[in-house]
Length: 404
Image 1 (tube, rainbow, N blue to C red):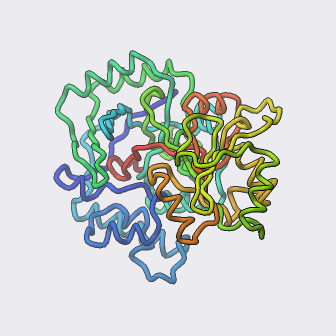
Image 2: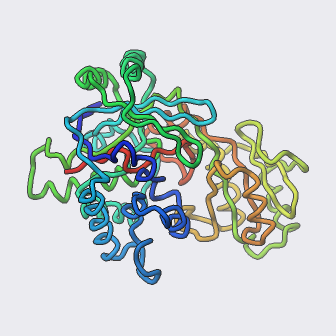
Image 3: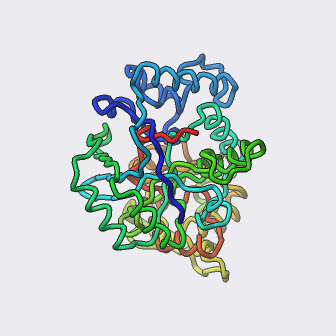
């Protein structure tokens, strides 16, 4: 792994909790508007600049990127965002519900992404990738980090602990209760050397950001072939895998493909053993719980299909291939509007709410994908179905910004 220090653009210390925002892709336009309405310093005015434009402006319209660049410039002109005095890497600590994650914020190279030193497990959607590419070029900055993980290394843990003995640059609690703390690393060279011993990193969250960074580098590299040009480096935070928490990524379907619930259950029984009156959340892998007609049913596949693809054994894959595809005709989970994904942070109650309100016909509560499954699938060069993992807590945008 190559990591590189950078001279961060960052919020003033006394304004950090007002500037740093949730990632652009975890909130809707309506939610982003509500979060930023009374806070002109919120970075959502940059990452989701459509909230400052008329509602008839499409989210990918040229006006949105122009507005993002203008809002970004305004935050700098007003002194809300300031430039760090020196290039360095940073320690970034998260705490949620008493659980800590200790990571390194640094720049990673698009060459490592292209050569699978940084490994992927999801396909990207072209329109989302193009959106982030245009946004990044408009700002000439990476404002939201790619969330990477690596297999634990004690020597890196030791460097992190030593850095955390110093007073932090930032230490604040976000509205969702997650604590964020950041330290500039004095031993930047030691971190760079330590990561040279890391054979690979894995994208946990941020596939579209990483793909967009690579696309930006290809576009700008047509005029500048320097491998070490700043645009060839993108912002990331790297956490050891042993510290990560993955929540379930649940599913809802809007209809039952013209079947009533009785007929639908008959079709499901062709492939699954069905239990009645089960808890909301499955207790182990290989179990999927379904909410239908105000009741919870447990589903267990009768026969595992043979495959040499480790991704095919994931519960989300079995649900997609054996139920959504065969029974409901949902062929492509990335594009079919009948399928909706619900992050595990919202809990099973949200699944019940969707069905009881009539916004969904059925909901499916999943057991979380394991971190070792993610690493194994990435190592095998395979891909997971979309929305297989929900990592919590989320990193904040604009705590540290890499410009080029």
